[in-house]
Image 1 (tube, one colour):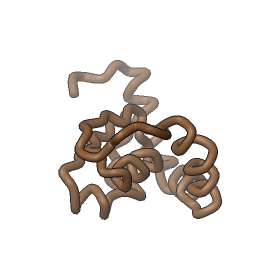
Image 2: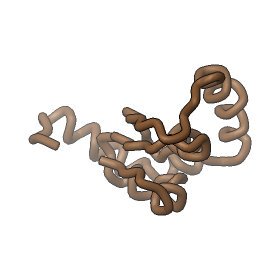
Image 3: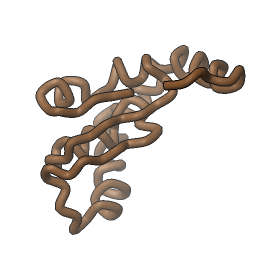
Image 4: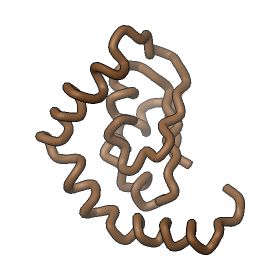
Length: 102
């Protein structure tokens, strides 16, 4: 990644600082169930994802990335917060696949 502007650095610092709380809020089983039923399934229904290369931009701690991995996609997660990526809820899945986080 190239050099970040001052406002981008502030944004990165903010999301790095709240990564744990963000993950706790969006990664709980109820939030995951909601996301699966009302976002992921309707948005991606009928798409053959197995083996497809996907970029999950603004992946945060990887809630959508985890869904894509479970459907067989090869995912690259991109987020301004490296802390979110490193703490991602899909980290164990990504380590068993060809997925990366930038």
